[in-house]
Amino acid sequence: MNECLVCKGKLREQQVTRMQEYGGHWVLIENLPALVCQQCGETYYTPQAHDRVIDLITGGAEPVGVETVAVLDASA
Image (cartoon, rainbow, N blue to C red; front, side):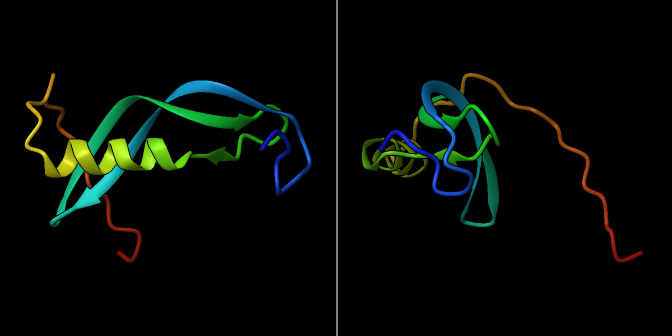
């Protein structure tokens, strides 16, 4: 895949950060390989990247850090 499905822009391989919910908790995954559109920013993950995410969140990997995130309610 080398063309964005949204805007037809060119895709480039790069490392991204992804937020993933699992078991009621959010996990931040850094340095995940992805294809990113250079025109609109749409991000595509390969099957191998998807498998890596599953391995990290289900395999008990030790976190390299812990962050605190503010939660805001848009309905209020």
